Image 1 (cartoon, one colour):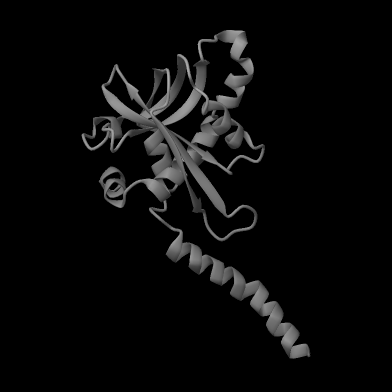
Image 2 (cartoon, one colour; image 1 turned 30 degrees about the vertical axis):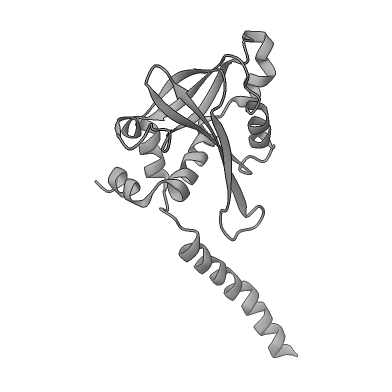
Length: 196
């Protein structure tokens, strides 16, 4: 009995974490973007203002973040729109399940219902903006939300709640971008951007 208890404790303390590490390393690693890559991506991004009156398309992809305590899954939502100024298609990307206060879910549910002129600011990576592979209907350029300026024709105090709901802090955007770079950016583009 004593030997089986020791084996159980060793298995629990060593084998289970080792197994989880192995599964995460071999199956959920992706591009494995770290703080350096996230900072490079963000530092090479500019805040742009967009005006839309509808989404052309919206969709999402749920995925396994990794074996860990708490939530193991995440979801990437995107809203496609066309920008007349740049003559390009864009995807406004947002993640769910990464903010403990359900802010991600509230933001996603709220922004879904655009049906009149809406303005917002978003981060646009300049490498991707200049890359001819991005901006088409089939491969929209990714942008990352920052602040809501106008919502369905309403301004200022009229959209105070919506503005707070939409706002994405720099810290949260860094988490979003880390997930995007690790899980969703094509490997070839990742190498081209970061392995210079």
